Amino acid sequence: MNARSGIALAVGASLALVPAAAAQKPPKPPKSTPTPASFTLDAKPNPLVFGGTATLSGRLPGPMAGGVSVRLEQDATLPLGDKFQPTALVTTSAPNGAFSFAVKPPVSTQYRVVAKTSPDTTSRPRLISVRTRVGLRLSDSTPRRGARVRFSGSVLPAHDGATLRLQRRTSKGGFTTVATTTLRDAGTARSTYSRFLRIRRDGVYRVKLAGDSDHVNGFSRLRRIDVG
Image (cartoon, rainbow, N blue to C red; front, side, top):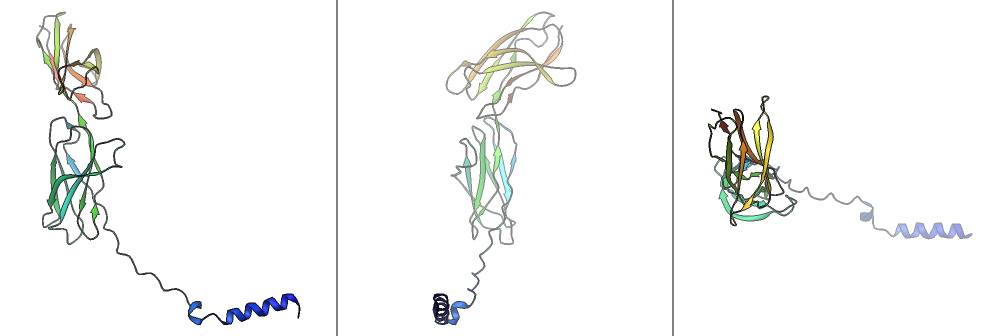
């Protein structure tokens, strides 16, 4: 007997010792319970002006959506969406699965809800963008042609040192910057500004603060100046 024949006989003998059960296919693992589909949150108003209140609302999916505990979570740190933390806000869904929360974020914040179904159901995240609150006062809304008008007001929250843009509406409906000024310290809660502008013709004006990492663009209300 040569070496090759000896090896073949040894392999055949070892295979004969393998139990028949080992040759059978392994049983299929049990099917896992599917995770409920995510659902969408609505937010109104959005963007939200600083200091205001927004309503987050939604409806749980499925036939057993009523009477479920729903917890609100938030992430206000950049980058948004990777560090959700539970808030103190918890509610119970209505018989049709509907729920809502009132929130007052100081900065742009991403939210989601977690419903205590089996297993838990998590909503898709919803970003609420927060605008700075920009005030605008005019010393005179009907000045003589060429007179200087004082634009002044406050910005909340404080943005000391930021550049504020005084803008006039164009004939096409957009706005163009006609002057700038710098926000000054007025305590921890707000900043203030004051800027004189020489007015030579009628116009509609506003003040704009460009957005930053915490807030989106803030705008004052529109103010009309009619030259007398």
